[in-house]
Amino acid sequence: MQPINHYIRFGSNKEAKILRNRSIRGKTSGLTMNANVIAHTPASIYGMLFASFPDIDFFIDPQTYIVQFDPIKYYSSEKIKNGTKVTLLKNSVHTLLSEYGEPVSTIINDMERLYPPDLKNSIDELTRNVINFQKYFLVNSYESKKTEDGYDDYSDHEEYEEKIIEPKYLIPPYFFLSLDEEDWLQLNIRSIRKALKLEKPEKIAPEIVMEKQIFFSESHMNDIAKAYNSIDGIETLFIWIDDFDETGVSAGYLKKLIRFLEKFENKKIINLYGGYFSLILCKEGILKGFCHGPGYGEHRGVKPVGGGIPKAQYYLPHLSKRIKFEGFLKSLFGRDWLPGNSSLEDIYTIVDTAILRQRNIGIFDPSALFRIRESLDRLILYIVNKDILPEDIEQYGKKVSKLIGGRNVWNTEFISLNWDYLVERILIDLGYWIDYGIPLERTYTHNKRGPTILVLKPHGSLNWKLCPICEKIYAFMEHENIFQCANCQAIYETKKEIIEVLQTLDVNFNSGLLPLLVSPTFLKVQSVPQLNIIMQEIYFHLSNADELIFIGYSLPISDHDIRELLIKAYSIKPKIKVNVILKSSSDTEKTELTHHYSSIFDDSVLNFHWDGF
Image (cartoon, rainbow, N blue to C red; front, side, top):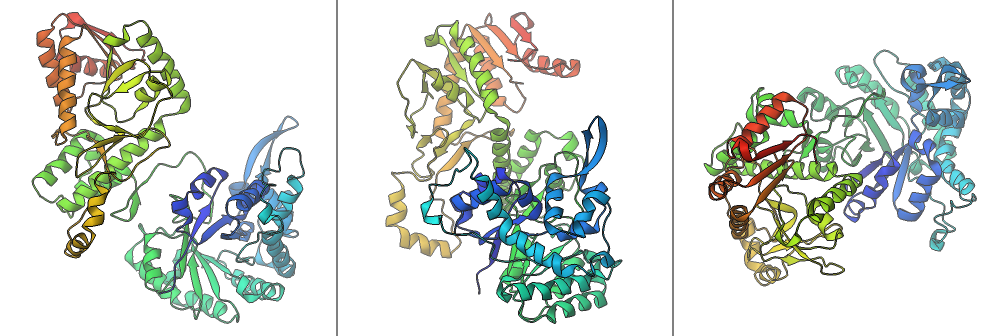
């Protein structure tokens, strides 16, 4: 089987860091970029390619279809000019249309869409301008910009000094095909024939963009395939089906897509917006490649949709599908009431109970539920990491410093029920040495060893990993990671042949370190010895404490292990001072949270602070 052409779509400069990741670069055939992105910051994009991706293939989608749609509705914004509100094209679209020349550039002033007769006599010149844009706009913008003081960030790359980076493919002007307007197809074909006169045939890769309703018109499908098959010399075709969500359309649409693709003769077809189904079609030889963005862009509508931040969707690798979280819950449990009336603890407990009793939930057997549970863990980890901002760390650090500044540090202990290691990072920055209360191996070192402070984490930590063989715990900090246990990796090496035989019998082995996290569930069972040691440490310090300070902790019912320790400790020290620091302005929420604490502590020792930490 020939290798799959897997292109990653570059959508903004913020994605450069992701694309530089070696694990991504090594698994992609190249990059694809839309022309409006190029028009917005051409010099910086060329600089990025020049410095980070000098040898990687890329191509540019010229987006000439935009001339077919109302510019005021889809490509403009209101601005204040000379004290008057005016409607102007977005800067990137303005630049793009200017580069493509007349009659396309007339949209800038007229603010009206074009029709086939408007382009009939100028398609050859438009083709030349569009090809030149793809070939030269990036490098020309960079060469012009880098002469400015302080901009030439890539001048030290002497090995690429003489190299001109240009696209692997050049896409002729193309227009959106629909059942309503049929004249655009002939303009597409004319632009391709002109492009073949300007460049070598292997460089020219036409693009077909069409509405999915065409799949249910056999005559339209035949006309399109016949028109493109009639052009000699074309090896590669890009295809974009308007808003074709492979995971959301019916099986009928998927079958029609396959039928349509099979109509093309000896063409290497690459889907510009595809996902897992496109990957399957590549494996079957029906497609030769597909494109998508880093975590998005597996389908896209031709008409841009703006307004607001898109709602996050989460990719479950074992389902090969990206769905909204509440959609996942409905598919898992088959009940509409879960998203609104069930807590995260309820969801985890239901899944854990099914796994423990080896029962199915719907179509998911226990092994699938275990993998889904892992996906939920990773989702929570992602959210936790994304929610911590640098400015939050700075503010939190000041408050922690103030909190322990007036106390005897030797008699102060932290109990963290969160997975993040924000407390440790702050305490290390303040010069403290962290004692986790258990033996573990650190992969990080302090610049100096200061006073020791105890941080107990009974629910595990994002920066802890467990060896499944020897049960050693490794602790690391930011920008560090560890994947193998130094002691036990040798076992896998010496027993490699035996392991390979067992794997053929579907016996799975996990040779890597595992995250050490206790998920929010009512079925908390501590199978890791070190976590039991931490619980014993917590009870000792709770029962000897003179004051307890709870910060941002709701004391949920699901934390029954912690509640048990608090009840036992309180029975020994009934006069202990308890300060609870929470943030809430809702009387209903305050009542509920107060009840959580008053179910353990007497009101006489409780002191609530509702303004937050």
